[in-house]
Figure 1 (tube, each protein chain N blue to C red):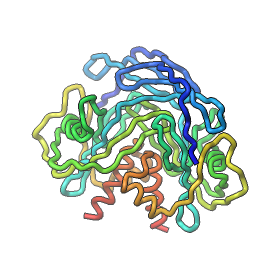
Figure 2 (spheres, chains in turn brown, yellow):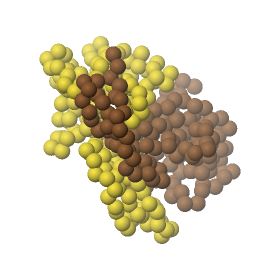
Figure 3 (cartoon, helix red, strand yellow):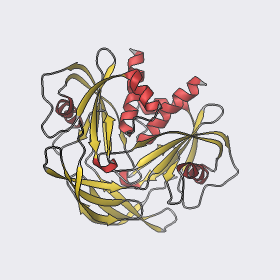
Length: 179
Length: 179
C-alpha cells in the first residue's frame, strides 16, 4: 500500500532569506487533484548542552512570529556550506559563548511536516568550556544555566513552549538519569 | 531587560488555505531595522491515544513537504469555529475511527517559533472505544496500534521523525510507567 502523492505542477510563490513558499498540485491515490502549500527551509540544528553537574545551558530570546520571549535550547539555521555538526559547534559558541569538546549527533526530526520541510538535527554537547568566546553581536539572547529537574517541572506546567526544547529536555532527563 | 522587536511595517505576501506568509519590518533593540518572514497558521491539535494495555494508536501517512511516509500521532488543523478539545475529539475519530471517553489537555507548544506561529495543543486520549466510526473518506491514513517500548526504541534509533510525535512518545512513556 502506498499513498504517495504525485506532483503534477509546482509553482514558486516566494523566495526569501530564510523560507521559500511553493504550491504543488498533486494527484491523490483516487486520481483526484489537490493543492499543497509547502514552506521550504534550509534546515536547523538544536544543541542540548549538558554540564558535568547535570544542568542544561538554555537561551531566552524574543520570537517575532509568536510575539513572545521563549526559553529554548541553543539552535540555528544551517548555512549553505555547513555540515550540521559544524553548525552545532558554531551556534553554541555564538549564542552561549561556550565551546563543546564533545558534540554527538542524537537524531533528527521535522518540526511540522504537514506544511514545511524544516528538519532539525539534534546534538548532545558535553565537556563544555565557558568564557573563551563572546556571544556574537546582534544576537539578543540571554543565556541561562538551568537544572534538569526545574526544566522538567516547567515542561509539565506548560511553561516551555518550543517543540525542539521539550524533546531535548525529555532526552536530557533520560541521559542524566542513566549516567 | 526586554529584547522585544517593534513592528514598523507588515506586508502580506500570500493568503492560502492553510498558511499565510507575511513580512514584518522590525526595529531591533539597537534601533536597527530587520525583516522577519512569518508563516501564519491557524493552529493544530495532537492526540496521544493510550489504550488500557499501554499501547499508542498511531497513524502513518504520506507528507508531501518532506516526500516521505511518516509515523505520527493523530493530529489535525483547528477549524475556525472549534475549541482545541473539539478538534481533538473530531480528528481522533476521523483518522482512527476511535472514540475517546476521556480527552485531557496536556500542554501546548510552537512547532517552529523562529518563522511560524503554528501552535499545537496536545491531548491525552484514554478510555478508547473502537470500531464505532469509520475513518473519513479522503484521509489516506493507515492506523497502527503500537507498544510504547517499540516506539521508544524507534525514537532512539531515529526512525520517528516528527517533532510532536517524539514529544508524545516521551510523554506516554512517563504516563504509562507512572500508572
